[in-house]
Image (cartoon, rainbow, N blue to C red):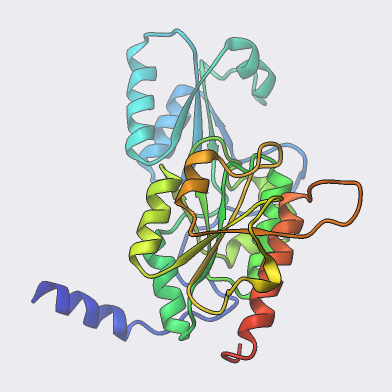
Length: 284
């Protein structure tokens, strides 16, 4: 009975406007200075208060080797809030610090809040469209991630999934590279991409991994149904475990001397092929 009530409540939620945040997420204003990230939080008390206030934190860098009780408390609180906790030596923290008083801890706040995979699937259902999702497998360059998010928003994709570790977060650089698309795109951050792919498969989504040696040329792949496209990292492509979870391996033919494309370019090509295929299946 409770499940029925929950479903009824979801069905009554009005569909989100295309260019409004459908999740009511709190957004941090864009960084006016451009190069230096003003979403960086430094010092023990400042980081603790940010976590208490519910600020969405991407990563917390904590000085390596310290056994201080306050730093242990920050690390456990950050993990409980879903942030990645990274050990860093003093030289790295000193180089990162804007205040030169980091006290052994620096946090990076996200420019907007993350959503869940369920939220992304629900958005597709509210639009009456089969899901179209991009999965970013360890894309660490914030400019690349921002460009991917920008193309996802432009093509009407329903969401982006990124891993918690070994990935760029929703920093000021990502927001700028996306031209503000981060504020209109549903972005989920997950601990384990392989498990996330399993969740998508259980929901009826077909998962395609983009690879230079893909078995199926992109124009022969069927993106008209529920689709998730996996884009690998700039250097090593899709990781082995994630690749094994994909249903299909899709290739973008290369005719020149360069053997690979930029991750954001690959995402754009695949997304617009999906748009081309779907344009005959439903109207945008």
